[in-house]
Length: 401
Image (tube, rainbow, N blue to C red):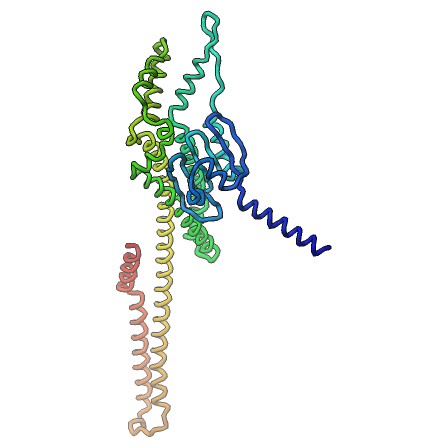
C-alpha cells in the first residue's frame, strides 16, 4: 500500500510539473482598461496573438535569449530582461505578472493604459455634455496603444538598469578608495566581486542599447512596429472628408480636435515610411540607456586606473626588494674577499718573505679591508644613486602611459 501511495504521489507531482511547464501566468490589459489573469499554455497565446512558436520561445524564462524587440504582422514581441510581453494594437500580454520586478511594470501599465473617467460639463441651458472627457482623451492618447505600452516597457527597463548601476557605483567607489589606501586580501576580493558584477551589468546594458540602436538604424523594422497602421489601413478620401465635416462649431474645441486628428492621422493612417514618432520615442530611451552605459564605462576606467596605481605601488616595492637584494649581495662579496685573504694565509705553505717580516701580514689585511670597504660603499651608493632614481621614474612613467 505504501508503495502504491508513493507511486501515485510521484505521478501527481510529475503531472503538476508538466502542467507548470506548459501553462504560464499572463496578465492581459486591453485598451479599455480591463485586465485579466490568464493561466494558459503557449498554444493558446500563439492562437490569440497569431505569432509563431519561435517568437514565443524568446519569452521563455528558462532559455537564455538576448534583449529583443521584434515586430510581427499583428504583434510586438518584447524581451527586455525580466519584462517579457506581447503587444498588439488593442492589448498587452505580460508574462509572470506576480514577480517582484514585474509588479511595478504592471502598475505603470494600469496607470498609463487605463482610460480616464468621464467628466460631465453642464452648459448654460442645463444640458450635460461630455466634451471635456473626449478632449482629455484626445490630448492624452495621441500616440497609438502599442507605442504607449512600448514606452512603459522601455521606461521600466531603463530605470531598472540605471538603478542597478547607481547601486553598483555607491558600493564600488568607496571600495576602490579603500583599496588604494590599504592593499589587503579582503579589499582585493571585494573589488574583484564588484568588477565581476560590473562586467555582467555592462553586458546587460549593452544588449538593450544594441537592440535600440539596431531598430533606429532600420526604418523597415520601425515601420513593422506600427500595428495600428496595419490594423486600420490607409486613410481613404471619403473618411478624410467625413472627419472634416464632423468638426465642432466651437473654435477652441475645433482646434484641439484638429491638432489631435492630424497627429492621429499621421501616426495611424500616415505613410508607411513615416516613422518619426517612433524614432523620437526610441531615441529618448536610447540616450537614457547610453547614459547608463557611460556611467559603467567611467566606473571601468576608474577601476583600471586603480589597478595601474596598485601595480605601480607593487613595482615600487619590487624595486626596493631588488635594491635590498643587491645590498646584501655586495656585503656577501665583501665578506668573501676577507675569506679569500684568510684562506690564503691559512694554507700550510712556507713563505720566504714571511720570515722576519711580520708587518707584511698587517699591511695585506689593512689593504684588503680598505678595498672591501670601498667596494661595499660604492655598491651601496650605486643602489641609491640618482641614476637608480631616474630609472625608477622612467619605469613608473611607462606604466602610467
